[in-house]
Image 1 (cartoon, rainbow, N blue to C red):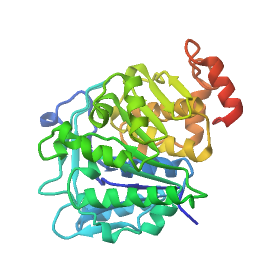
Image 2 (image 1 turned 90 degrees about the vertical axis):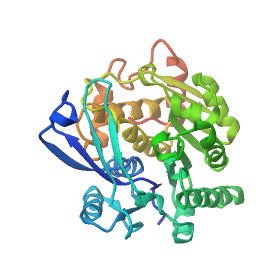
Image 3 (image 1 turned 45 degrees about the vertical axis):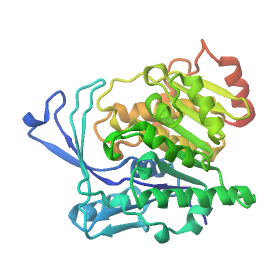
Image 4 (image 1 turned 45 degrees about the horizontal axis):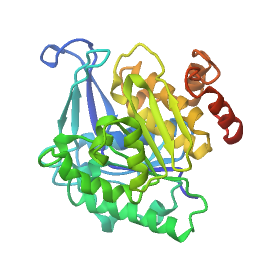
Length: 351
């Protein structure tokens, strides 16, 4: 049976302070968690009941062993997580200054093992068959990962063109712009690689800064339209405190406000949103209810300390939505209430 979700890209260990509002030099206690955005997305999807796996690499070291252990505990298939002798498993530290300041410090030198994924090592049959395949912009930043990522995307694109993908749902490009991972941090130099990836993806998701890297546009609607013009069928533009905009090639639009919570650590919210997006796509939900569910999943993680271990289960998201203003779906009464209601009835919703 094909897996519901296969993600590809970063993995590592997050070392998070157990004290908030304290700079790293003064922090005295830490905890470790499984980390890496695509890995967290796989964990989030698994928490929502989906069969998920991740394609990545670790060092051959105790932190690499921990990554395998944690993946198994979260119910994520680790068969495509292999070791690289030459490089250590990456470690990431953060500082926590709620509500909106969470500096990250990546230790990925001389090179991260997840950038040593080779195209000829990929299980292309599994990638072709997966109902959702999820990759990120970081996978494009360096060889051999860039070629491997584009090879996986091309296989998905060829399968779509041949119309043999009866069980396939989406190929998702998480725009995931991290300038420190690129040789010169130059968005203009990265853009051609993003454009090549977009030509094979069916869904693109990112915040405004990431959308600007991919398209050169900055205004949300212009970003979404440019992503559609680049080849995807669904563009999801995350706008922070302004909520999320989803635009489909068939003309459907959803604009959904954020879900209010008291923020503890916002770093894992985007990954929870991603896992929920996979879940909603697989369930066939309409745009507006899917975006509300994604926002609620992200909000739950933002209200918690960790990333991977904070990913919510479906009943938790549903409870948050049920108790939200405008329940049952935290509907945006000032925006698309009537259109969303019609869409919910026609296409299904998460309740």
